Image 1 (cartoon, rainbow, N blue to C red):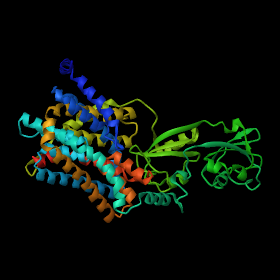
Image 2: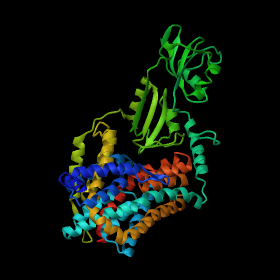
Image 3: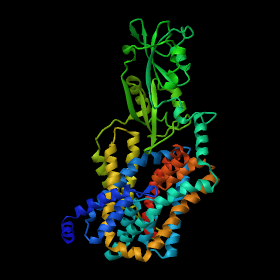
Image 4: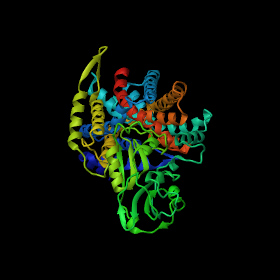
Length: 560
């Protein structure tokens, strides 16, 4: 029966690819001592096992899926990558460089000490620093080496095997490190995060959490009749400022007429006022205005919730507190996300280009606010496949360009070229939001499925040699991988604390970004009991994805 299945897979190798993905995703979700391997490691391990059948896999699918993955990664991080070059937070770029260069040097030194070949060393770096794209750029560089096809195959197989061995500690070891290191350095991360939140919230004590800052995750609409003589004759803007939290007057009914109004409209006795806001503010409504009323005509307001991508240069660099005071009457903030990670809602949280703000409020107010902030991220299934395809074409052509540096041929390779074009197209999309849209679902397909299709092909191809490689160098690779995982993080932490005096909460978030390790960021957030570490994640994550991907090519040429 097994022999028959193998023969079917020889005739239809796509069955084996999909089987590796299915098993890999299942294995990747399993919890081992509180952590999971993730889909990429799961797919690679499953493919290496299934690869023992020695079934040939067409390399075309491997190249196409890798190109789509890298283009999508570049498109995603492009705005943060180029935007960071203009911002004052350049210390985050330095953190990325220190981590990346330390990882590269450590890999080269250990490769020489243990006698690893170029393929093993490149895979070692990719797994230890959880950067799967290294496999693709290393493979591309190997194809350009002046050696036989058999030697190229051995090196490519060693890349995959070394990646699989070192990736396990790259994920689990880094998570454990960030759970233990605060104690080793005598840092109470929860206390540090709470102090940072209080400072950014403008609060004097821990009682005022960032989530209680004047914009709310839930919006309430209430109606009141003016009976308090203290507000009669006052302006609408004066009334709104009397509440302890942000509220907005949405409607005014005078007699039987819903009237037009502006911030300077004067309140009269008996006016009926519809207020929008959070419970903390509206609970004071009867005390400040008068009795609450149930008038459906007054409080029947069409609400809207929208995700807005910030593009306005006047908004970029402002804090949430400044933005709240400047504009946005009747609009309330539910969520702020950067690189798919939710950030704390504090007065001093700075807004970056392409941040996603989730705005809730009356439709007219929200639509007006959207025009000021940037571009609305409306749910869509549309993807500009012309841009994606042309991006991969142009990137592949750029990757063919070779420049001799000190008599060493240097090239970006297909992977580096496509990544570069993806960065540029992602930045252009941020500048011109009507250009080159890729829907959320399509981005997931390109990044997650694209990567894992590539990984499945790599694992199935390397499978026949995996067992022998594990026997001969498995222990040494695991040990070297553990050192490469920890060394850049330790050096980066010391550098960030001693040179830039960074807050440990933000620094640890930045270090997880520099190693492109989202699971480690989640571990830091868990230890800190706060989302503030995510504030330091975005810029290092963008630079880490680019620099570590290029290291695959560099290592092959250096170690060859």
